[in-house]
Image: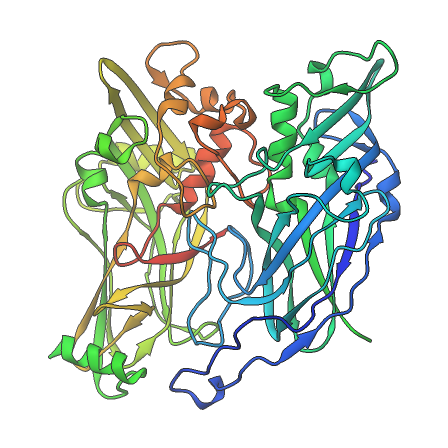
Length: 266
Length: 279
């Protein structure tokens, strides 16, 4: 059974610096402007996060440590690449669509400007932010650099620290990986993941955003066979430059590992 | 007069709703496909010359708005060889009420048995596309100094290029604009360099061939899709390109990566864009 190891981080919007677009167009019904919306904040861990999951290489993985440094997040109306999303028409009356070959974020709808750190097994407070009403379809996730918040010491400058046990048949590997901001930087050199899916929502009121970090996606293609078995019961660090570590880093850079959802305040 | 009408419509932000006109679609592979992708385009000094670039275009569709019923639609799929010189006629929609039609889309999908070969496309090419279920097939030679590599890749991807927009009279315009007595000439442009991008999502993607050339595991000079499949993206050194996949799921090797890129070749009015939706 494939049990996802997840975190649900509920973050809050406060009134931010987003510009509310002005209406443009020849049709009178396009004259709607966004209203400011505020979001409660909370962080909740997923119950499944404490269970083992099996990756695509057949390894059953259990995490004993999963610390993540989080930074700013921004939410957009543009859809992710190759998505089946319905069209994204901005308030300005032009299409905010993803181009073939590259992601176009479109209009910013909300942002969280806070750095913190969370235990992915239990969840934790990430921060708060603000936004304007409208359709949201994608997000930018940022790793916090340097790490702040309750796990800053444990992270010790890394953006993620992962320890656990991987089992496959008679094989057991105790592993550890400390991932740096340099590891996860994008093509512009920033430790951010653009074009993450935001489950499409028409945000028209206050509410909350949940971020689910799909740890199973991070580890999905990692083959732990490359890692030496532990000789002393302590985790063995994934060697820098190894295929196993590179695969983990690629998983961490996949937008599909960061899923945002919206829930209106009841 | 036609251009003035289009410009006036754009300035006003609305189309003139008088009379009738037409829209004529063509397709063009630009010098990159017809001649070569020069070394100056590649980060690593390769030159690529296509010998064949077969594309199945279908379902070119015009609608007044998103969600509205099409007012005109290409009647049947057509097979083009973009390596043949010059723009190639695709489909003309005539006698359309003069106005802006903001929703235009088209499809690149596997060839059905009834696909119509465009001028210059051989029956053997048609059979190759139909029997293999290809939507796109390319043959090319890549050179760098004394090194030469060849490849012949067929793709079975089906992609809707939706909500197209592109430059018209100096302004990015969604869809087409029909003016009274005029013809909006629309080019469905195919970009041959996209198959060599080093990132599926980033607008900063570079054009590279070193990693593809290195995939020639048996050293016979022919790079097959199976050889690309043997190259894990995680094994590509960071200095050789990011090969990021963004939110495209399940892409872990170079073959899957290039197949993903094959969904990005379709454009609109030159550098104009559409929303690529897998079908």
